[in-house]
Length: 495
Ligand code: HEC
Ligand code: HEC
Ligand code: HEC
Ligand code: HEC
Ligand code: HEC
Ligand code: HEC
Figure 1 (spheres, rainbow, N blue to C red):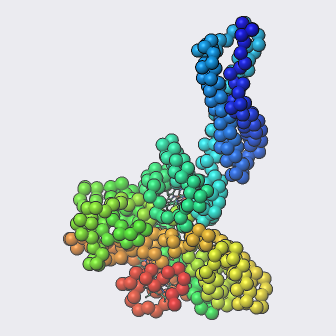
Figure 2 (figure 1 turned 90 degrees about the vertical axis):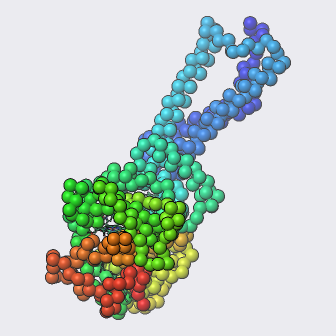
Figure 3 (figure 1 turned 30 degrees about the vertical axis):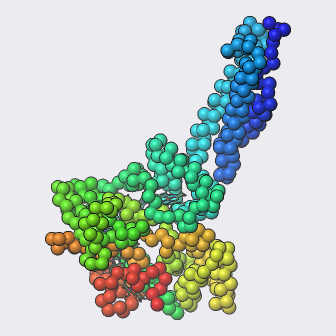
């Protein structure tokens, strides 16, 4: 036997290269995993390297060894008929026995490491770091907004993937395309919204919020600073009727009434961003249907158009389309900074100048931040500590809300909550959607909120819990009763 002994089948160039690769992959991978288990990496690139690149090298190496062996067998079979179908293992041969044990141990070790590795890879691709930081420039707007939102601790995947393996797999397949489009710079700026393959809200939002939980009213208090010399404040305080979703309390019609289990509201949007809604169908618990159509003749849909349009059932996202990626308008962001004392309202015309520098035409964030500093320094030559604070507050507003590299701002991503600078609720509730029976979708201010205080100043002392008629802060006659607010208000002061 020993005279006919052949060289091992793995003695060929391909398998040898494979062994070197596998060995490198194994040593590097094992070292990185040990380091990672002891001190968690927070840099997403090391994570990708450890759990994606290194295992690929390792398994690539193993594959090469196998390919080499198979090719070598085929070659030898042609020249030497004596080669047996399967290798003969002689357990009494000490050397062969030892080799077998080594092969078994190494294989088990490999399997164990790949199990740990893929488990860690799974968790890693689920992490906020992976979603938010890996595609740094692409996701920067959403990641930044997320960190400043009420959902900053929720985790991207809670809304974007949700529970279950099928959506995990789907999202990773989608992700492969996204990695491709990022590497080859093929993604659009901004990323288009609405997101069409977003998982239904019932399977994501409902894991933390559910309709029965909404009842009563929440308070909303806002102070607006006018774009005049004194940055004059005006305050509105109101109660939002957020209840209405619990069928057991069906008499109480509140904002979340749309979401009550008993009701279904469907609509057709005339545009991609769902800002124009000419057709609405309401189905109540008994199955009675009411169809509301816009009264504007030019926008009405024909029966053929209705039959061929996508009908969408209203859910959380049709109002809360920006629950976490909120890009505020300069007007709103400045009002909030002034209210919170981050920006000193005693600086003359700071509201107007803030709007001015925030709405400049900048190519990059760096350029914007520099320009904000130089232009404000020019506007207030006396300088001082309050100016330094104001500059950094306004720079921060810019960095959190406007992303020139991705062409993202409040204008690209209209928020459907409210009706001040986007059509929002008034897409349907503008008083111009009627049913054949003559019923109109309500524009009654008090059906959604009760104004309990309003007027000049930062605090309005007299609270009227019975509700007040709205007083428009600027004299525009009765215009606000008929015209949609967003036809004048756009996120910067109305001139
Ligand atoms: C509270 C739920 C929620 C969380 C948490 C969340 N998102 Fe979103 N995200 C949404 C919704 C809803 C949309 C869809 C907006 C639309 O369709 O108009 C969206 C849209 C997006 C978009 C498309 C662009 C846009 O702004 O509409 C990107 C990109 C995105 N999210 C990334 C992320 C990343 C990265 C994280 C984690 C850092 C994250 N999201 C966390 C709810 C969430
Ligand atoms: C992982 C749990 C979780 C998920 C999933 C989640 N939320 Fe929330 N959400 C929260 C928590 C916690 C708060 C309360 C934050 C606070 O009180 O400041 C909150 C607050 C909110 C608020 C109130 C925001 C405010 O300004 O106070 C809205 C609106 C909201 N969520 C909508 C949504 C929508 C829409 C979805 C689905 C796209 C969603 N949430 C998914 C946990 C979640
Ligand atoms: C018809 C539009 C609409 C729909 C649909 C809707 N909401 Fe709301 N929701 C509102 C408005 C308006 C508020 C008041 C707060 C505000 O003005 O930001 C609110 C408030 C909330 C709050 C904070 C209220 C509180 O009690 O603290 C949460 C959380 C919330 N919504 C979650 C959801 C979830 C989850 C869904 C889907 C089941 C949903 N909403 C569906 C319009 C809507
Ligand atoms: C797709 C169309 C549509 C949109 C968008 C919409 N609603 Fe509605 N809403 C309806 C319909 C239809 C009804 C039932 C008709 C009615 O009662 O006026 C209704 C009823 C209501 C009611 C009960 C009114 C009552 O009679 O007491 C409230 C409150 C309400 N909506 C609040 C809101 C708020 C707040 C928003 C924006 C965040 C909003 N809706 C956005 C279609 C819509
Ligand atoms: C269909 C429901 C609905 C109707 C009808 C409605 N509102 Fe509102 N309104 C809202 C919601 C929701 C918000 C809260 C937006 C937010 O959270 O930023 C809001 C916010 C406001 C604000 C604060 C605006 C801001 O962005 O700071 C004012 C002022 C206001 N409403 C006045 C009115 C007046 C006046 C009317 C009657 C002509 C009216 N609303 C009718 C739902 C409604
Ligand atoms: C015909 C145009 C027009 C319409 C319609 C209109 N506004 Fe105004 N609004 C103005 C002007 C002009 C000012 C004062 C200039 C400014 O400060 O932007 C103003 C100021 C305000 C302010 C004071 C805060 C601020 O931005 O300075 C609030 C709040 C406001 N409007 C709410 C509303 C609401 C809510 C509606 C819809 C119900 C509405 N407006 C409809 C023109 C309009």
